[in-house]
Structures are given as structure tokens and as C-alpha cells.
Length: 133
Image (cartoon, rainbow, N blue to C red; front, side, top):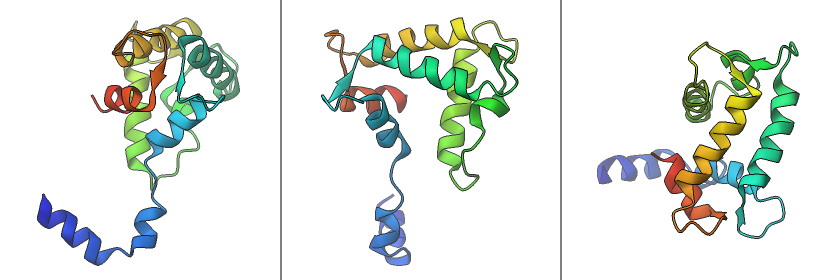
């Protein structure tokens, strides 16, 4: 592993590494809209509901995997994999679509998993730990 990190450091300029942010940190920052260092279940559900409505391209009340991952650049396979896994975990009934109820239920499950100290606020560290699983 150490060899691989050294090889990457030699082959890639520091600027290139700096321009490849962890999308999960950017995602957390988007969820922490009030910049308090965390988000609540209500924050997540509100933001997710807006996103759901926006990305439901055909307005059928359900999201396909294509709708769920639309717009993620093909060069960001890490983000594609993350949101594909989230889609699969959100599709509770296994019908190949995520409806609004399933999306909101996923928010509950994510906060329950991530909020390790059960204070009702998911911090950056808690979020990053939960989404790495």
C-alpha cells in the first residue's frame, strides 16, 4: 500500500491531487447548509426531497438508476459506485425504482447508522465513517 501511495505521489503532481476532492466531503458540506458542523434527519430529508423532485425526470414518482446517477461524470467512478450502492439500499421493495417513501426511509436509516453518539446531529466524521461502510 505504501508503495502505491509513493508511486501515485511521484506520478501525479500535487495540484492534480488537490483538484480531486473526495466527493463525500463535498456531499456532507452540501448537507451541512447552515455550516454548523453537522446535519439533522430533518435537514437530510428536506434536501433529499428537493433532489428527488428535481431528478425525477419523467415525473413518475419513482427514480430509476439512470435518473439517480444522471449527471455524474464518467470520470468519477467513485461517485457513480457510491450513488449506485445508495440506490440499491434505497430500493427497499426491489422493484428497480426508488419512490419518495423509500428515499425518505433511507434518510432515516442513514442518520440512525451515522449518528453514533445519538445526539440527533450527524457530524462530518460520523458521516464519513458511515458512508465508508
